[in-house]
Each structure stands twice: as structure tokens, then as C-alpha cells.
Length: 364
Image (cartoon, one colour):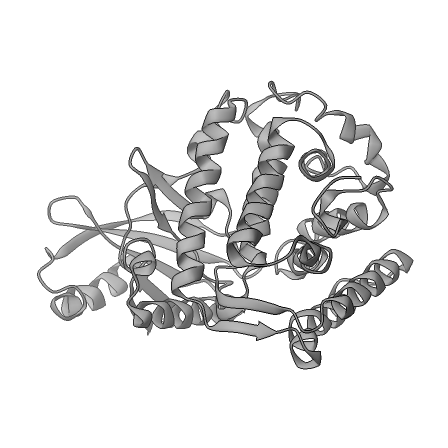
């Protein structure tokens, strides 16, 4: 695939990247093993610097994600705002080459935040963790402010779009038990209590986790992988994604799963065993039901972001379970869907009161 795509890019390079050195070589940087798999290729210029990044569909099943990413990136770059120009990859080309759809983007600097996150000692240091949260939160606030499409009143139509459609899709594609019935009845009742509330809408990344944030010593340098993005939607989806993903995988750098610096985290292993054996349930319980500096960091991140958006804490009781439902709806391996469903069941059935279900954002 590299030779035909390189030939196309070399022929069009002066048009695609004026005043940039011509590209020469390329390597395979990664292969997605999901059912809708893609190959990522990295192209270099004559000086050996990054020149372009290409995602190539391996089958027709992976083409819709590339189309969606191209459309979202094209929309965002059309806004001509700093948070996009400085941190979001510029789309260069979407074209079928040698029978496969390829999306080519300009490169961004930095490495994934996960490189430091997975290093033993990083997540045990409150200052390092706080810096990660600060970088992720600062860019997200600017991005949401600059891509905002205005306030929308939560009326019957918006409730149907942002709430009802997600619940029906979940029931159709994931499953339904008495647990879901109780939880989503509660969600609808809470949504009814918020009718008339003005809610901000802005562009949504859809997968705002550490692996998609590029950083270096100067800070956050880029936000990649916009396959789940949309031009406008509820801002809270990205707000929840970062702290939730940060909490789930903290034990990967520690054989045995015991993470230093997080007293009380491991007790959720036994407490939530009834929801399944997925090891990352521990991190979810600790982040949203536990006590200590890290659960405080998570709560402050979410509530601080809501305050910046002008959204009351009571909205968490509606949008957080919808966020969990959307995670379970994502395409991927059946085990991943089952794991995300387990998070939703744990949230629904845990008898302890979490601040996410409190009107004032306080634990009970």
C-alpha cells in the first residue's frame, strides 16, 4: 500500500503542502485489530522529518470511520480557530488508492500522554497527575468555547436527540435488563426535572482519552483520532471521558495491580466482583465512589468544567449514565462492550451515593 499512496502524495505534494520539503519514505506505524481495522502509515520528507500521517481502510467496514473523521476535521479547520489550528491535525486528502480508502493528515508534534502515564511512579504522584488533568482540561475548555454553536434549551426535541435516541440505541444494540430499566427510567425523570435548562453545544471529540493527547515538555501539542467526532453535541461527553479513562488503566504499570499512592483503591476489587471480572472496574469504583486525592481530582475536574460551562451539577445524573451507554455502543470487540456495560451496571446498582447522582455535586 505504501508505494501507490506515496506516488499519489508525491504527485500532489506541492498542492497539498506548499513550501514543504517533498516526502520520500514511509513506515507502518500501527495496525488496528478491531473489526473495522485500519493501517496507520507515517511518511517522512527528505530531511527525515515527519511529513504526513495516513490511515488506510483494511476493509469496507472501516471506511465510515475515515469518512466521519475527514468530515469532522474539515468542518473544524473551516472554523479557523486557534484551538484547532494549533492542536488538531489538518486533513490533506481523502482518496481511494489501490482500491482502499485513505485519509491523509498533516502531522503533529509530541508523543501520547500514555507514555508517561504508563511509566511506574507517574500516576502515584499527585503533582504529575494534576498536571495531566490541567493540560487536558485547559485545551478542552478553549476548544468548546471556540467551537460552540450556542445554548440549546432542554426541551422535548433536544431531550429526544440527546437522551432518548441514546437509550433506544443501547436497548437495541447492547441489551436490556431490569437494571437498565431502572437506571434509564431515573435518567428520563431527571431529564424532565431539567426541562428548560439552557445547555451549551459544541464540537465533540468523542474519544478524549490520554492515548489521543500528544504532549511534550512544553505541554499539550495535539489531539488526534477524530473518528468518533461530531460538529456539535453535548459538551459533557468529552468532559467525562478523560477522567474515566485515566482512572481505568492506572494499574498497567504495576504487576499485581496494586497502585502505590492510592490507598483504598483496591477494596473496589472485591466490592464490585459481582459485576464481572474486568480488572478496570476497580479504577472506576475508586474514581467515582472512593476517597482520597485522586477521587477529589476527578470530582474537581468534572465539577469545575461544568461550572465553566454554566451547567449545574444536577446534569451529571442525566449525562453521565448516557456517557456510559455511549461507551457501550462503540464498535469494537465483544469483550470491550461487555466491560463498558459492566461499568453502567455498577453505576446503576452500587448502593453508595456518588456525587454524580447528587443535585449539588456533593457525596452523601
